[in-house]
Image (tube, rainbow, N blue to C red; front, side):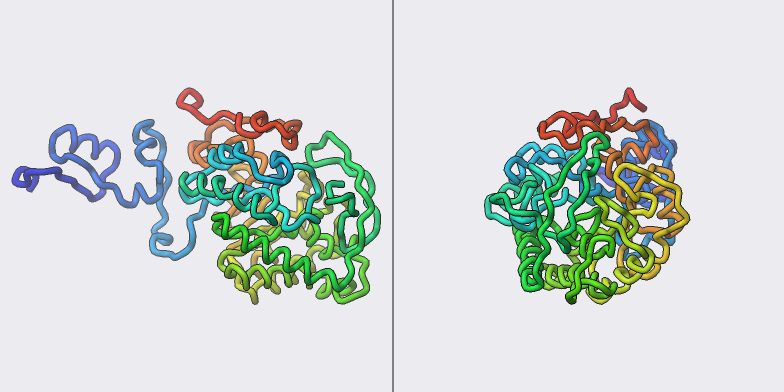
Length: 400
């Protein structure tokens, strides 16, 4: 057949690297087609070139409709969006961390001018911000800071003590918050809805509602902060009301299949803790099911404080079992822990923050089990558009 056909001839069927090279060398064929081996090794040409070990394929997953199991970039605050407008240097930052089949969750983004907890964090409430996000998103697809000196808003008016910042170095003093009136809350829900609409206009595939780490939604969820006596405080159901109203509004605006939420029921960032995190986690997981959102992104119980990884008997497994959509976990994972969490069906996806920050090619490094760059905490939140942002080196052949 090869001799009779006068043009390019390709063969397939059970070939490995050595067999494939042999049949080309012997002029038995011009090209060799690989199926199962390529399925399990998306970078198969590079692996063959380096004669690297291959992933084993799993026949049981060949015909599932589940999304690709990959590595996820956590939403990392970087404080390089001057005047709350995303900057061109973010194009390189996010592009560096883009891989085929990977998921990038953009940094926490303000939904209104009352949502500015740090300087130079991006927003999405103005047309200028939406337009600034567009080239950043396009590049990925193609491969006391309140306005006018106002007090920050919260579920409470209790003051917050001086806190060590997430970089583990600096301390921050916070202005006393202003307790939101009950009649103001529907307006805030609408801010989230509009922000979600703007995100889709900017080209994002979807949005993640940030309900974790001491941000506004988390301040409503946790009884250590929420001391309200209206329908948004007191009982667990009432404390979760605001979060669920936001999820419902955002889902109705852009479609539930484009919505995820991040939760940290066990964390105690900025004195935002809860007396019964297990019950809170389970209630939110079960309540979210009725909105049929795409995923729930939960932070491990061991990550109680920023930058600390503690031993604890608590687990996200009950939350995992209760939630009916894609379940993502974050918090102190390395390559081995992440693989184990997926293999044991503890999670569908694993989210990486600091490792991905310092290793823009993290999926490839994990694939090759290569050494990782060490991250530099002191550069996490500086406003420099290059240092600690886009200057972490990629892996090259000399590192293998």
